[in-house]
Length: 146
Image 1 (cartoon, helix red, strand yellow):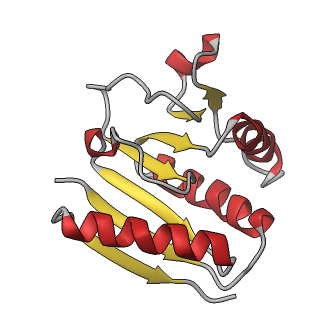
Image 2 (cartoon, rainbow, N blue to C red):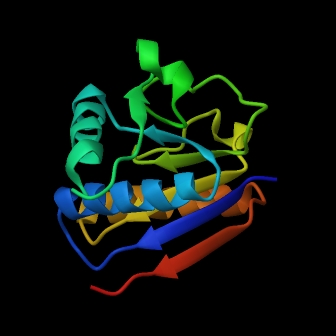
């Protein structure tokens, strides 16, 4: 069954949420997962793509937009509509940055949700928490300090 982790940030900005997403993506990929970052829309996906190039000058996290030529050859993909193809090579994780829950989330062994203190995010992710719990998925909260 898919394990769901909620990371709760003290910050209120979208920038802080996306910056943390980059750090979390590096951690998840470093644990051997194939990772898919599910963005709210194409603009957020492009923003994430750019941030993953620059979030840590001393490191590089190989990644590609889903549907691009490189998407098949990297462990980290970014998309906003369709899920990536299943992988037999490594366990798969989803970092969901969309306000809702994608229908196909249960294809992944792990799902990470990031909450910050922005009212719209709080409301949307509370609903996600309730949905996961009602469906019987194991949910864990990680309260992060500023």
